[in-house]
Length: 235
Image 1 (tube, one colour):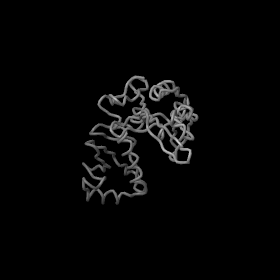
Image 2: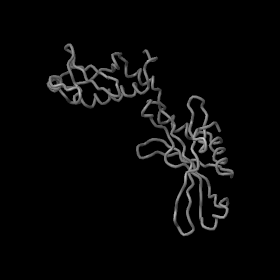
Image 3: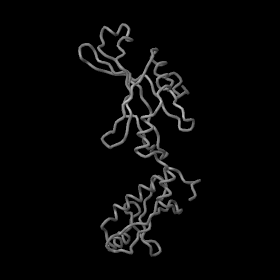
Image 4: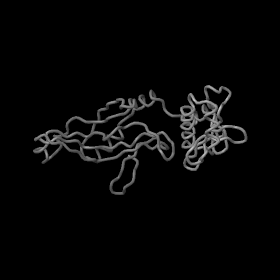
């Protein structure tokens, strides 16, 4: 498979198109395909006939994804195991290999074994006190593995604010896990937003962001956000 011109965005869109076509054609018959092809509208329809061959086609972000419809079984239509992207055919299995996404188990293992020293160093620099994180690995409501970082109560470091605070902890805001970048199609680790959560002695709660960390896939290093230069820098 030629992959030099292929991007992960295209590969991911192609796989999405292939899966969508399978669902769209499930339990459809040849008459349905012929009717759709006869009234094909490029803006609204997916099925068209070209040189006597029925195609399921989709255009997205300037790319055209096409699948040949297998009409050998008129009662149960399927599409082949390949997708044509801008005129070049790729096997779905090769597209999946090209993406090389981390499996759920691999994501969980990486989060469980992730070293926190750089994140703790950055957090300590930002707060002026030693920060030591604890880690919680969990699944969200979609079954994705995520990580939560948090500290013990830091109220002893609150200075004059100790008089009004019952508890203050440093933690991560939101889920920390892997996601797909919508622009590039790359699988990435989400940014780590560091956050103070605090509870007042009268029961009120609040919070405040104090840092951001991202993982640089090219250098395999964590980088901390500099709020003065508005840039991420090596920790």
